[in-house]
Image (cartoon, rainbow, N blue to C red; front, side):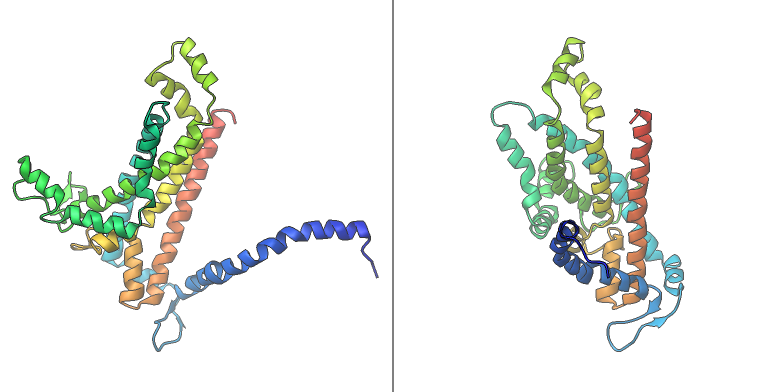
Length: 309
């Protein structure tokens, strides 16, 4: 029988120690994330309700039901609009803010704090506050009435009419809260990237005549590409999973005009107790998020090849 030598035993211990340290966290993740995800995947192919019914295998029946569900396609469209409208703003606007607060001027620390403050505010608090602002007699409508733009005010959260014929007013109002909450968070990510760029590069560019806004076009944007990609991925995934804003401010109304796919999943699971159907919706959402991540990865690879990385 082979016996471990002392040196081999030491090497084995060194290899096992990292796994011993991560074992508790891995156990918790397995119980709270991996195992529920596996169960949800299985339940999406069954007919199951929480109360008084065991899971019965039905194959792709739930997915055929999804294909014919008009509300599901409506929520999927709303989620796509959220993705198209919110993500570009959260990729571009925070970079401008980061460039602004990265200036060495008096009071910039205060501005950084002010822009980041919405991030630490609970979404529940933010949603309630914005709901008051959007109210019929809220601050926004009072301002519009005072300056004469809209004498009757705008039904921000109760109108299914579409801005520019594309985005419902209620959905756009919820989008504004998501953007307001996310600006400071992504600004900090960009700020970290900006502060990693040596000043020598900007000084050399200034000698070559690249100054003012041109230095950001010539230097900042190319060097910030990894951070732009990171923000694009994070904001895209967040946009597809938006829930709290909708739940607090509109609850998907009116006429499903602000209902997103995650809110529809919640509604089916906890309001209608359609557990299997909700798991099917969750599986579709998971595939969408994986698709976005893979697409972003392929784009990054192509960009790397173009610049010779």
